[in-house]
Length: 488
Image (tube, rainbow, N blue to C red; front, top):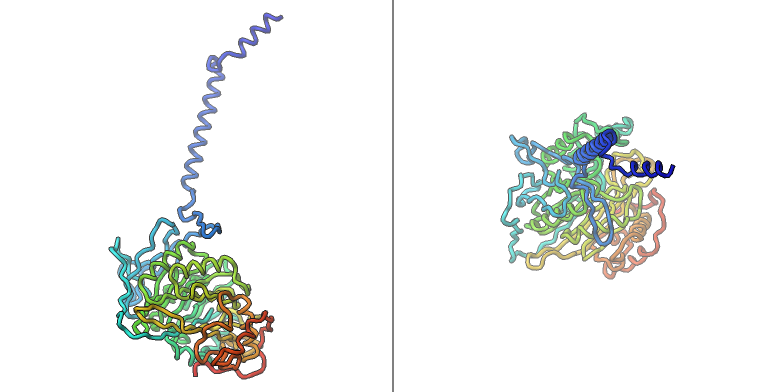
């Protein structure tokens, strides 16, 4: 029995390849495994992450950089000066991958007209042209006015609400809507709004959205008739009616002589001999790295750079860390003023490196809601002094608390400035979320809202310190009192 057991042990140690059946089975299994590995490699190759989906790290914060939307803000075949071109023209940066190793597409040399630079970028330029301001020119002052969301139509998913704005146009006419602020807009040098929703007759409605905004192209007269010079189109509603709706919006604005900016597309204009550039971004469409590179490039082509950014959380009165980090990065890249929108309510203002970041202006002439719960908003003004040898200096700001409606009970789409009592409460709310300055030590423009309403003594600023007290949550409605006139 022991001998037999020994023989069995020896047979168990024989190599498998000496047994044909086992060898065939093992080879077949190996072939199957190799085939499976090849198939997995093919699948991974076809579905590997796009090079856009990289990690971007800044100041210890880690974020996933979202790729630029495919063909985002594409205005192919459209030129802002000559109408339709023979060849396609795509907005610079529209499909740019936010790759840190890449460079921003060259931006066309600024012109002497308000218009976005839609010329196709040249290849390998030797150097991007720098501003050519006369170094011996006298100093000039330029006042910028900025307001928040303007939806000159309504939500087409709510026909009743959509028709309300349309019917108001028919009843009151175009000049009605911005009547209370027209003198202010006419007295400044440049007025910028966030146009939230296309002006188009397109039926290419984007599916799956809770709100689809659209306004009649004729409503551009609301802006043109009240001295609005530039519209930021970078927001989450600009393509509610597809690329065709966006292209028609751009064409409509051009026809009215109003400049526009969107997704890295730069709008240049000369104001009193000072070259001003306006950029607009939606935070979710581009990585921080791409935005910073675009701002850096635009900075080289202008004397004054204004960046509009759609960001933050809706109905949140406090700017979050992501907003602050991106706002700082935009200033670091060369912006002179950052204007925030999207939350639909006001947020704080920050003075960072002697530049202002307005985190949220709130709504303004807003047809997207027939009766907003909070009708409060903010109008921001700043005056810059420019001298070629000295550059830009701050000559003061103006914070005008306002309401999107002249009626407390509904939205009549006619914004107006607040009276002193309610205005002070809103400014306290703004001060609570503000950084880098206080109401007391801010440099204010002459004849500002605080002076007009008696909240501050013009000579010494006395009274403004009361606004730096802890904010008292104000009711959305307006208090009794006469609203101060603006710009007269």
